Length: 390
Image 1 (cartoon, rainbow, N blue to C red):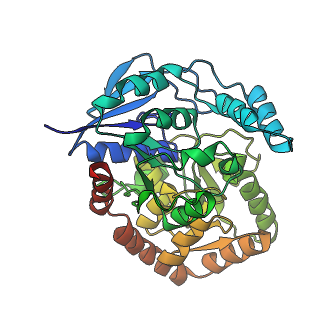
Image 2: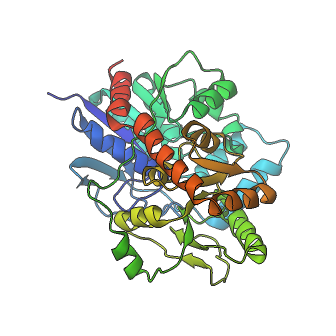
Image 3: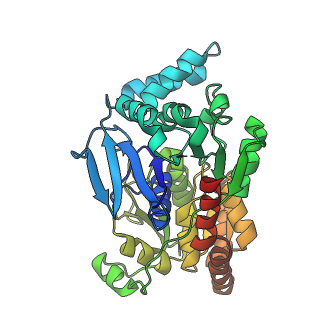
């Protein structure tokens, strides 16, 4: 009889394409070969409002039982932004102000927390994904004795809130996605004594060859482009990317177009060379990656970046934000990308790649080799099993 484990995550579903949520689903599905897996999550789909979307309390998703609990109230952007501003600008802020921020951050589901408290004994281990949300912050202390934390942590303002210090000392094990994340968490919280491994996430791509021709025909693409994939948000560095790209275009007449894939929560410049495709299928996303000249990742705050790894798998080199240690680590270890910290370096990176096809081809091959060597599913799942059985 298989042991029963649970994953706790803020959103879950085939429609959910956020980085940590997707990582959680992929790992849960892989581990279902070895354990009876359940997902404990909310009924929210939209991470901006956390509105209840899924009607079912229990449903099966790719053969895994998903228990959904209602969110008690939506996140109102104006209220949250005001609280967010206050907690950073008030020099006298205390733990109560931070807790008020967490309540507004959400997704607030008191039924989910109560379920963890009352039913933890039926699970061998409970794996909490992402330190930042209500579900982990209030859920993990209810089952600390059997908790495994996958923090997906990076150097961002929130992680320095005093309320997070105890959280990082509670779990039985911590699973990091990268060496950079491990070093950062240990330096920030001095919790080296807790059992930990660096496991990462495997790269899931279609077994069959992606059809670039079908993708190009559907979206009427007959031009060279550089690509951004992910949430189109200022917090992901997209505003800076737009500014840098438009500035670069003014002095470089042969600039490829900038293709965008993902949901936009900010205004996209009205420029004929910035082309948003919105939401696309996974196959279309992979085809876009394979056909791109370069993948851009402008975010300063990434704990792994599946998008970068997927792009490297398809031998497309990357240009990333040099303020993010994790992204710089991928470029340095993989010899598969360049990084910038200001516009001059952004311009230099683009010029260096776009003017040297041999360099881009070489980086592409090295990138694929890097992904094969470091993000193989068998190695990663064995590390998760090691923590679960510890």
